[in-house]
Length: 201
Image (cartoon, rainbow, N blue to C red; front, side):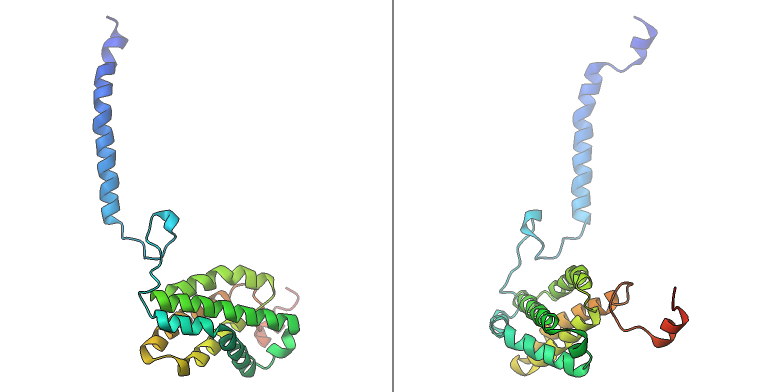
């Protein structure tokens, strides 16, 4: 027997070590799964998680809001234009109609938040539409103003607990629009002094 063959492990020994290594790897994976916190309900079912339970929150209030989405969005846009009259001059008729549609989509997602009791769904939606709004040349602050209008329009139609849940969802989405509106490329109104200082830069 040569020295090289004597020093290398036998094939039978290597084969016997494989099951033990596989068992150790499975044990590590199981331990990591236990230590990892579960994802919140409502994540996509294709990930193996439970779908959204649309009866966990206020399903009756959600149906009421969804059925009245067009009126709520129109009232929200009116309130936003009243708070900032320049909206009527910064957007043409097509732009205002698109903002109205934005309001309807916000109300639709808000209804899902109410039905499921998951406030974060509206904030997730606010994050997802940011690039779309930016490409259209719409300021994030204008969508945030529509959120405030939706909040104002809903208060008389919902109970105290229902409105509190809706307000939490709207406030988290408005915070997303406010934060993303500070990023470069947004059509927000510039500070006059900074605009003068950095003119031509």
